[in-house]
Amino acid sequence: MTDFFIHNGKMVKAGTLVAGPANRGLRYGDGLFETMKWANGNLLHADEHFARLWRGLSVLRFEWPKTFTPAMLQEQVEALVARNGHTGPARIRLGVFRGDGGLYDAKNHLPHYTIETMPLPEGNGAWNSNGLVVGIYADAVKSCDVLANLKHSNYLPYVLAALKAKKEKWNDALLLNMHGRICDSTIANVFMVTGDTVATPSLGEGCVAGVMRRHMLSLLRTNGFVVTEQEITSAALLSADEVFLTNAIYNLRWVQAIGDSQYGNALTQKIYALLQTTI
Image (cartoon, rainbow, N blue to C red; front, side, top):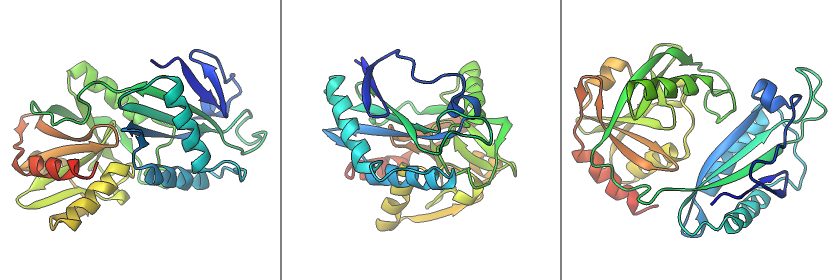
């Protein structure tokens, strides 16, 4: 049930229009978002999500009042979860955007925001024993710039990659960066296993600075795994032993095929089991 959402602190009925044609979020994608998971009465990894959001607010030069705080937003998430009657896990989407104005003449730089909640399907986060079938999308690439690591509203490369995945009947699509190397997927960060080494594209490669990516790297290093953040070519990925994707909603999902390449999951299953002890 998702009967209500929050707009600038007010709970309103789903379907209510809250932005007009002069809104900068609509005109220019002038905003950010966070996708978070609610489970067992808690907003998971809340501190990390809000830290990333605040980094983005600074990069995009928002000016927020003292009352606009992570604690305030988290209280509103809790209120909305209760109002929408979620008794199980839920997806939380927090969107922050500038208000009305043209390219240079925004009325102000205060953050406007919406909060939405959506129930997650039964079995969310369970081990995907069938594995994902994934493809590589190359028609739109990620830049390696100041915006690359943010969850910002200019999402067209991911939108196009997702449409390609749907057309090709892939479960997800991987994007390349401006140098032609592996970046991330439409909704997740990508990891590969080669021998006893687990590797993921470095933040300098243009991937989103995923909250679960950060958690995974810390978990693996703490438990003695050999981990690298590096450049990853398509050829290296296609010749890897195992591949898996991570995000805050599904935690970890094993990839069983990319094109003609097939992957095992022996080490990935061990990593999944280890991750489950921390979620």
